[in-house]
Image (tube, rainbow, N blue to C red; front, side, top):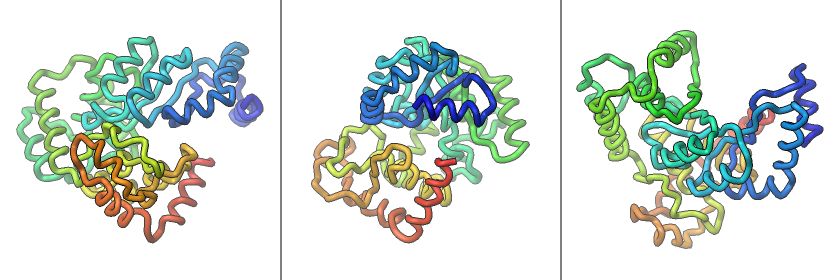
Length: 304
């Protein structure tokens, strides 16, 4: 680990990395790398000044998030958070937990991979936005909702052109914690509720179906299936599927096609979803033609 860090410092022509991120942790991943001495490595690098601030990014269950927060004296964390993911992954509870522990919180996916800013919006969603007295874009609504939380330190939003950069700068300059009115917060809550009603799969991401005996990441499979169908992200969703489900980031493949229909998840699902049948639909959509090519592309992207 030290040699890798030294090589990166040399490549970047610097003696220090201000914010060093342990990427894409969940409970199992943290326990595995902790056993390899990552905490001791971070201690050394912080003590000798090669790393100023140590943090981690997270895609997992809320209790695992709290465990990782408490497992090391981190300076910051990075979580997925938007008005559809208040209860998913770390969620609002995790956000507040980390902030209360003194961590800076970086929010990724404030627009859910661009889905919450997509044009056109689903008709039922567009009808709700039209009720508002202002003329904010869907992206502005979503970003302002995140900035409305005092626990949020930084918001990361993917931008494709200069106009989006300008829009995001304008929103960030004006949005602040507690700036939304009660009516505006209520409208966003109705939009979130409507999105959940029109989702292809009504999975809340609670994680009660996990662990799957075959290693299937059930909530993430359903999240990306919804990204594909409800939000129309026809290119992004298949790519994220192989990146997250193929074990490229975690080392643990979790494809929908790994399901053996043991039915354990059906017994544990609070939403009473027919999980195996839904996973068959996910596998039919994502695990067929082009899977190997997408895997190769994702490996190239994350190796760079």
